[in-house]
Length: 92
Image (cartoon, rainbow, N blue to C red):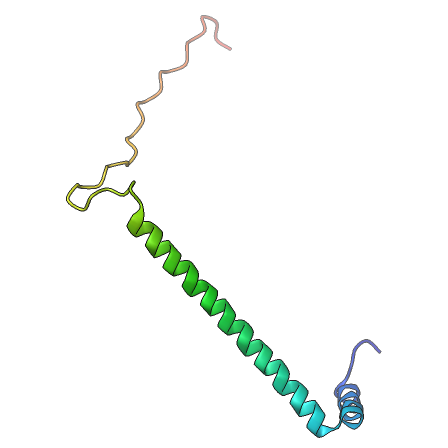
């Protein structure tokens, strides 16, 4: 009473095949596969373009240190201990 069983899915698939026919259905699935493939290829091309632009930008960046200079030390130093809190004359 809740969801679709295997029989519901099987009957639905048979109705779709009868309406569209085997040849037309397989050609539609081929078109879907081609669309997915071209989408993935476009995404890969976009990633390649981004990496190429990033590499060019790093090469042309005047803010980069020359290779003969050592890197600047930016590690944090331990903090000095905090002063103890002031003592009240009265004990609480």
